[in-house]
Image (cartoon, rainbow, N blue to C red; front, top):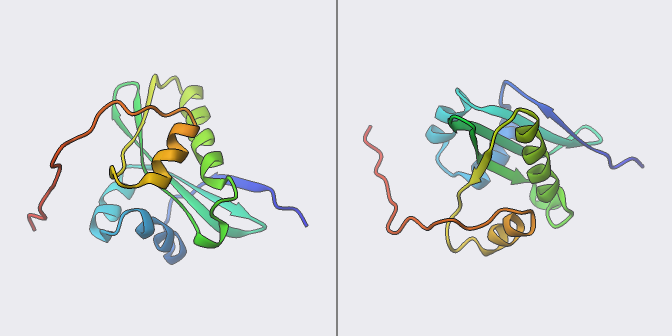
Length: 134
């Protein structure tokens, strides 16, 4: 059985994409807003959607990973690390100088994976909250 991870762009998010996206960002309105201006990738194994990766250019030469998620039954198998590696290589190939990712300070599993894959903590936004205006 071939368990090759296939990472490809996608343009239209299906309900399965949303199932994954909403595990990393529980506000569907925010997901909908950034999907309109993002670069979207899906990860499949044997035709089964197992992960998503969403990138947005935030500044010149800077790209941010705004959503990365792996299906629960496929976690702890290195797929998240492979998605991070894919994002880094994709950004380098397009001459970005910085790749960023943000997460909650209590997301210890994610912090470990990000640091294991070369990301370094550069700052903490204290008391960072927002309110839905509409």
